[in-house]
Length: 410
Image (cartoon, rainbow, N blue to C red; front, side):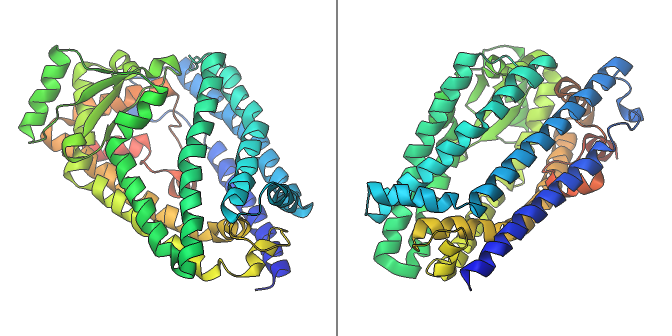
């Protein structure tokens, strides 16, 4: 297809995505003033609910500013030949396709992160600070940034280099080898995420012996869930928000509790939250999500292989000399509507899985402590208690709190 036509299609996609996204945000914001649901009156008083509404409104206003800036910057970059300029710099530094691509993407990704850092800094040290969530220091903030860049260069750069190398050797059949490589990396990260990735950013310590550990182990034995690794993560060094997650599978499966979770919930509530996570494992949601992610990656790479040699893909972002790296950017934007559709499907499945995991916890443990845990976590995190249905449909991977409570009571 003609590059000029694709250029205008890309502009249309970016503008339309902005309009739809901000329209959904507006609809969601209209529900902030809704009265407190009756089911939550036992944990939210009037002042806490008002604080929750103010937190959402503040994030909504800030989201508008950051979205306008981000979309506007991208459009200006496209219209005034920003990608051509970066491509020229990359070609002046290397004529080899792999280093050229690494330089091209390095300038774009790190440059974009530097430009948007003031927004994340403001989010952390002004908004989150104002509402009592932030525990991070400026030193930790910048340390996380540098570590993130290093990981992006090593992991992301290595995978990109291999993909281009496959393309040089196998032509349009590169997608098969790239798919295998990405699948292996995905499996490896899922298996060893807590052992290799998490320690770069956080400290993990085994859960101390005591009544909580005994209750968790008793429950695990009751449902036939072998667990030897229960760790506490020092999430409180960045935020007061609490979380818990299950990672890995087989002998590498591990339960991780944020230290903030231990402070916010009673022991029975913590076990109920873990029963929910065990439900995901028992219902094979972890395997399904992993398989679906790998399948979608393969589908995307296959579609990419069809269009990667089309010069129009590079011309679509204003790059005059066709290349793999420029075509990859153009394809990524043009493919984004399909990504939105697959994302919607995955969100629908994810919400279904959350209900199933809740039901597992209700049947094997108890619904009362899980309901209380969900209420307390929503209260402490100032969650949106009255989201708009359209916003939920488009963005929520978990059902809204009220829907989960009513399901657990059913």
